[in-house]
Amino acid sequence: MATTNSEEIVIRPTDNFDPSLWGNQFLNFTFDHEMAEKYSKEIDLLKYEVKSKLTNPDSKMVETMNLIDALERLGIWYHFEDEIEQKLDHYFGLNTDYEDEAYDLNTVSVHFRLFRQHGLHLISDVFNKFRGGDGKFKESLTSDVRGLLSLYEAAHLRKHNESILEDALVFTKECLKSIAPDLKSPIKKQVEHALMQPLHLGYPRFEAYHYITVYEEDEYSRDESLLKFAKLDYNVVQMLHKQELLDVSRWWRELNMTSKLPYARDRIVECYFWAMGSSHLPRFSRARVMLTKVIQFLSLTDDTFDAYGTIEELDAYTKTIKRWDIREIDLLPDYMKPLYSAVLKLYDEFKEELATEGRSYVVDYTINAFKEQVRSYNVEAKWFIEGYMPPFWDYLSNALTTCAYFFLSNASLMGTDFATREELEWLGTMPRMLGASLEISRLVGDRATYKIEKGRGQKSTGIDCYMKDYGVTVEEAMDKIVEMATDAWKDINENFKKPFPCEKEVLSVILNITRVIDVIYKNNEDGYTHPEKVIKPLILAMYVQPFKI
Image (cartoon, rainbow, N blue to C red; front, side, top):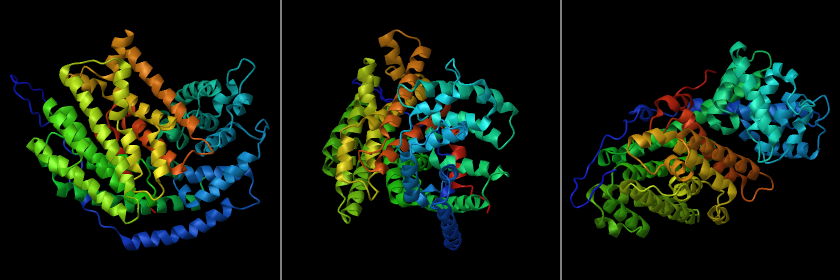
């Protein structure tokens, strides 16, 4: 960030970030309508077959629950949303006696995970039968690889004060790490992936891709119809995603903001990746495109405050954003004018489009959140430029806005057809699930970017503030950040529960964008700024590589 006063020379770095990895790669796509129609017809036939199995009144609970799990893991559950919800509600209401020996560790764990994923909170006591008299999990379980893996995945849906699931996570992680080298695929592939990326914290679209590859290798238990269904559906939806990526890439190129703001990150593909994290379903196409554009402009704004502007310039930009009036543009330095005018124009276009549906008000909520976002960026920028280190909780209070997840929660809903004024007002009350999402975003991001920020001379990082306030080492501060983020995940799990306080899709958006944080900052890497190692393989899988049919 540039520093200035009457006696200093303003430093203007314009090579802060690596260029885009992708060039024009996603500008060369042509939607194959004939192929999409062919696949869609095959999918319709398979849908009928699967629906018949799912709704068969003679099917046993365990059999149907395994089918639901397969549909969800393969990413084709959305074709049967109502049927799945009805089945799970019915089975949950049966109050099944899981003490029965017929329910082994794998079965109980899968049922527990499925119920909780749908807001039905089966009590964790169902796992008591797998513990010995000493309260520890039985040694005999260490040879049950499938059961251990399922319990490991289920334990990530734990809430506060569920010590049995805390113990289960430690137990299963140790066992799986120990036996993984001696396993054979496909179970080896599943275990290694789960240890790196737990399902509940993962990016749903990529988790489906990975599971299809594992399922295909399982020659003994795979269902050929489900496998074909999953591949066809993945490829059809991938065509839609590639079309959306083409549209936003073309939009971004035509804006030519990379030449106007050369100091900022050129990350339109990564912005789309982030936006698709909110939901990859076909019906959210418009929402993804809108959100991608919003995230890209948020990124430009972030870089302006974080890596370029002076105090006077950033104050001016904050004031003009608050006033939201193109007539204020002459108050800005020349380099900021293209950004300001483009931001206002983008939201005007959103309002014009949504006005035809009587929903232009949803844009106002996002604009108001953006104004607060910019105000908080300005507070943080002044701390950095002035070398001020605030108390940790003052830092965190501001940082829960600069993390952008309140803003993105609102922006994610703009292009949907279900978000009403009531849902947006509910978000404004900062419900605990949303607050926990903000905390995870900020804390995990702070931990991942600490070394980068220190390298830029940043003093007021969250880690540094915590160290100063509590007199602890970097390692101790990092451990505390992890603990706080873990507790926030428990809050999310606790609050994703029926009856839902609003439309389930709103809660799902909060959950999904929180998952993006776990993925994009994997292994303390900043996968957005430096996508090569972290998210490039995911982008290739989701937007480049279709399945062979």
